[in-house]
Image 1 (tube, rainbow, N blue to C red):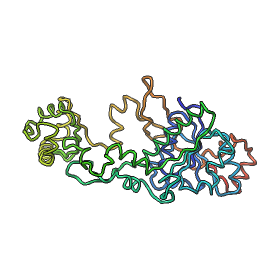
Image 2 (image 1 turned 135 degrees about the horizontal axis):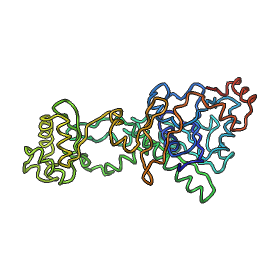
Image 3 (image 1 turned 135 degrees about the vertical axis):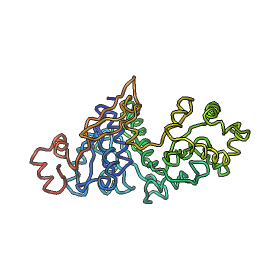
Image 4 (image 1 turned 60 degrees about the horizontal axis):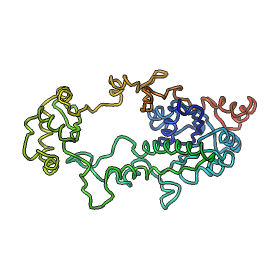
Length: 375
């Protein structure tokens, strides 16, 4: 496993931090999820997402506000390579898990803070969630479909994108540490992550065409049986292939990419009508036979059953549940694994504390003091 031997302590909640550490865990890192005795709120709000992002981890239920927690945190920091927190600026310091505190115990620690707007700037203490970050970053300013208004994606773009960016930054810092021997303090803003993504798709020029990123033949369409399929017709040869299936769209107004865009509303209307003349099965079969990019709009549960997913080992099962693994293969196979299921609250508290040097009597004392909860 690429990250075998790397130890991560994750103090974060909800999505971004846990998603970051789940990537590291899939790649072989040992991750200890630290949550309060009341549990990560994600356990209650979106349990399916919580389970996906916290498999492959051990769980330690620790009351960071208890006086006895300080010694546990100190031992965790000394044993870790990476620490992740996802609170608003200032909260980590009040809980005694800020960079300055942990770095004193372990100068080689890679410390990653994930927050809505970053640790600096006038918005640093502003509250927010994914939809706020995406909106403020410009991600909801432009439509994703021709002749349709902007809509919010069902995917948590800033949260998942931020977790991915944090994982990349952590790996870069670990690589740098291997050369310098020094740890790092990483400051990731979910808002800036959404802005970075939006800036890849849209120009920062206020006068830019708001439709420059969309095409009338690269869209979602309803078929005769009420299903939805996507067409990904960008290149000219795909359009020519599609005309073999739908010759009624052969029109001088649609003869080139420029003319298709110039007459986009008319083409979009015609396409919608044409796509309703056949079932989704018929369209997909015809598109496959004529080398036209087309796919049904499926649910994740349906996608998990696809032959392509199965052929590449994209889904693994543990304890009666199915999970999607980190998607990159190396050297012709997956160098990721599902070693653990989803931990219950405090399931590994005793095990982790013993590894940190506490004896049974000390563990019992921590539990009685309300500093620790065991599963």
